[in-house]
Length: 359
Image (cartoon, rainbow, N blue to C red; front, side, top):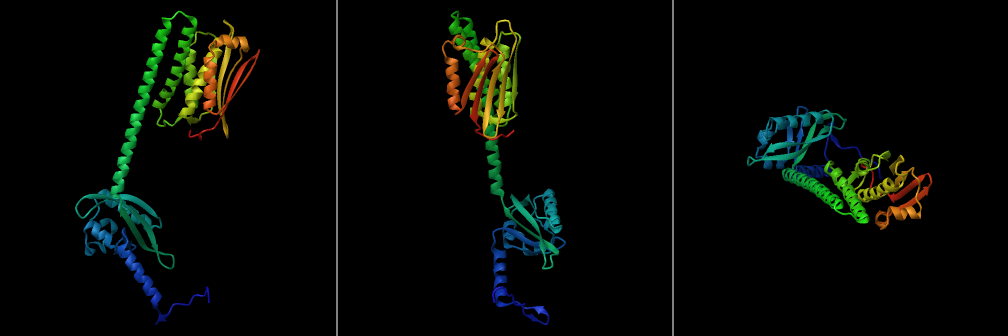
């Protein structure tokens, strides 16, 4: 009947193996001999009872040198530290803990290899720990590859850091050239255009400054990045009494997104510094960046006199700044909304959240 188990046959109270049991036992023996892993069965004292052939082939030791010897006293370990690690592996297994570690061992040819060794308790039918099972694999080649890969990644990161540093310096040099050039030009619109170009270059260079100080070049901390841009604009402005504040979530956003956001902030804050307030009046400009569940939102507000069409044209006669903001907004797949009144102006950019926060 299905589901009914027959009791094992016994002879004088001793369990007798059926033909099926014998076949299964032979299968396990063949598996034990041929599996391409180091494998051994230890008693409660950590001594070898059985050991697979691979261990002998790999280390050059004989069965007589292994069976009856504790796992950590076998002469295949590379040094005293490897012996200590192998002992801990077995002691943890005998205490009922499954554990693993990489240990240096000595091959048959005398070379040093690395084994990924695992230890686990060996239970009898009553659930009692009667010893330990240890098994592992020669992972020397894999360890070498991992070390080479790690070195290559480190080298690439160093090159990228150096590149970011060089780009930052190059941008700073270009900005300085633009500043010097503007001093030699008398025509107001050309002078203003060079000043605007310089500010845009500085905004991008601030991004590379942030990357140079970070171990993650894929994302940028938006709060510190916007603070750096605002500091540069504040220092470059001749306006006294104007306070520029930054209120931003502590979040990291993709570098490409941060570049566009930084340029937009540069245009909006520069415009507000120049045209939102009377010549001698105080005022406040606030740059905010919030991270929502699906969208991010950038908002630049001022408490100035507000803008009309005439003042817009006066602020940006070429339309370059406005065109750049609109172009960057489309690049970000965002939406730009401007609200203005006699109590100030607010420009809000809503953009899809293109990357999770890894802060």
